[in-house]
Length: 256
Image 1 (cartoon, rainbow, N blue to C red):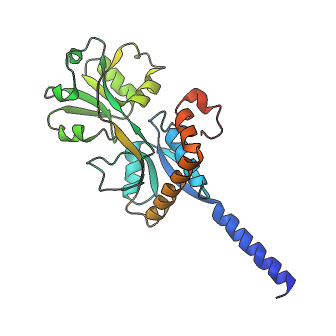
Image 2: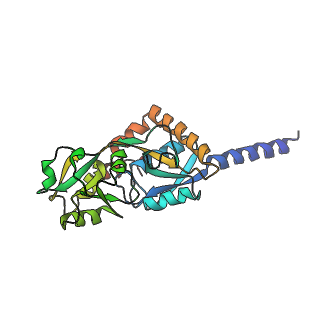
Image 3: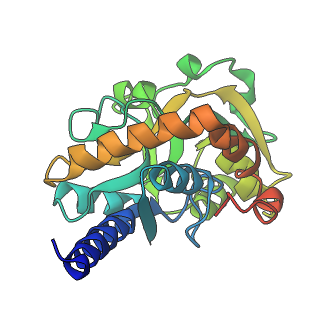
């Protein structure tokens, strides 16, 4: 074969490999779950997924949307993947989930510091019609699902709405993931009025994949592979340690 043809062939193969290594995947990230996913596209979950896909030569860009809209996009097969879902009873059969959770996160019931609920010891003691504030679309575990008819579950779009309703006497408690509560309350005017009371459920947080997109299982396998690699090379532990802290995030290049 002529030298020039060999050169062209090698150049073409190199270009093709380079193109494949620069594949870009759009990941849906929620806009109201600090420190997991922040409105600016940063966060613990976002950092983990970006690092994992980088190990398998896929670049990630994030589209930030409310969690309810995130699930609707997946339901319609418009996107492959979204972040921060737990395979609870309500949704475990509607989507694909990656093999190992990104992380696990406890939740708690937060009440006012003079609430009558402080007399109760556990969530099973909640009386019928107790008004519990949650975020629309969030998953909180099977206890809430089992007790939907017993409790009065009030859904809103953001945590600030829940705090206001609690202070005004329109809720009895707010159910929140502890890391989110810590992040949201630290700069809130309500931080001295709310108390973390009894425990909710600990949920395993995953990436969630559409069952209506032809490439979902392909990208699911790649994410699992990438997560195995960052667990093995130490990047996972670095992200878990530092990328949930807003102050540390700014110091670490591995954090978004």
